[in-house]
Length: 293
Image 1 (cartoon, rainbow, N blue to C red):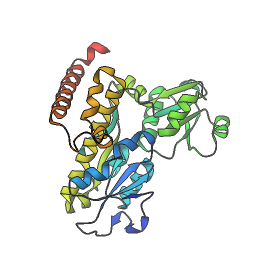
Image 2: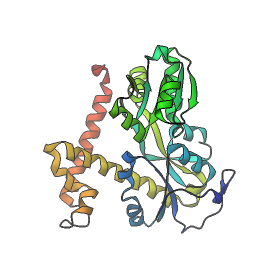
Image 3: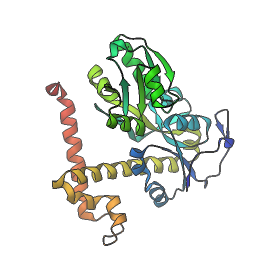
Image 4: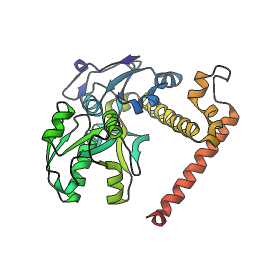
């Protein structure tokens, strides 16, 4: 079942009211276009594992707050929000939102080079990106004033030297080139540290995991399963030689009725081989990353 927002009445001061063992798991969904495919078949995947779910839409900062209050049970939580609430939450290790370099959807747009930035308007939809920007500013040797981004873009352009945006807004502004300078925070972090950046993790409330460990595990597996399918579908779409892989994805099987309502064994084997080869290649590249610096 899909709901636009979670009600706040079922949680007070961070403590959720008791819910029955058969109650639907309340799962947060990030309200950005590039995240929607991950959840498109989410409820069906959970149902196949014997778990029902209420999908609750929200921006990252809203979902962070809902999880902390107990208004939802599981979500892709900002990594900094998880760190702040780690005593009450559990990390589901199957999936995260991360990048090794540019991410495109987290951008600092500026009217000047970094050294001349004095005032920055920051999105209220994120937590991790704001913390990351403050770290980068310190490394750039600047101490700008930060203020919440409110009002139309025309006002922001007049009042601030830079603007931090994430998600759909960042992708749109990147495309229209409204600012003369833009800095991809994932790329800047990689240049600074040589490390990947983890923006969000799959987190669940400890009380939910303790009461319903099977449901919590099913949520993590379903998200990881759909993430893998999404990745393979994208690769198959844009790499002509690998178009045959489309038939190994859940998205293809659901939309093309002439195939089995399950994964063909041959395509499962192909996908498993590709995944293992990719993992091996990734491990090799990471081990010898000094050659690429």
